[in-house]
Image (cartoon, rainbow, N blue to C red; front, side, top):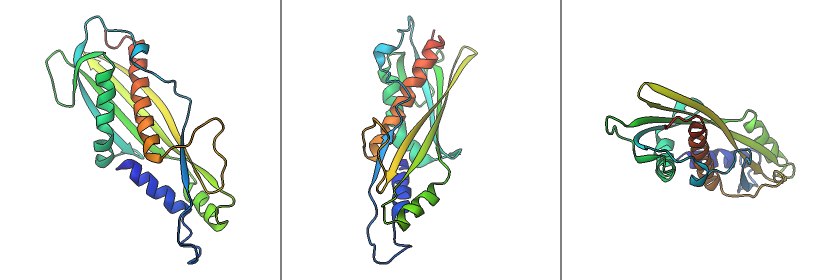
Amino acid sequence: MEFQRLARRLRALACMLLVSSMLTGCLATKAYVDPALPKVARNDLTAVAQPRPVQVLFEFHSKGNANAQATAMAQPRVMNVVSASGLFTSASAQAGAPDAGVLKIIIDNVPGDGAVAKGVGTGLTFGLAGSQVTDGYVCTVSYSRDGRTTETVLKHAIYSTIGNHSAPQGLQPMTLQDAVYQVIDQLTWNALKQLDDKHAFE
């Protein structure tokens, strides 16, 4: 799964096995979700006068390439948010009724540059220096119905600290799995809110 892949990558950056056979463990990592995106819930959306069913086409990408394993992990959370939004009479990954809209969502994980160098530097100092790496997420969403398409693009990020590095100010640490889940939920809710603000579902 995607969060496991990210966790392995971050742990590998902090491992000292390549530096010294004396060190057999890995330095602890903590994940923090960027606070820039607002919290959105169903009450923040404008009720649709005549909601329609929707087909949800979702893919998770890694550096621009489709990631089937991560898609399978994230899709249930995306579907849960779409269903909970109240904007549609039903939501399905399969083609639905003739009057159904099509909601396309792509979340692309774009890790920040320099992560390997930062991890090696932390390892060489036995964690005393510490480091922080960033995983960025770009969410591209479109909704189409009756020949009309509305689009929006959002960005999000997870900051992970390795070794003796201070936490980002004001943010609470969590596991990488929980951080990835939170990012997926927030991106989906905010995408629906932005499309709703553009009257895409009317």
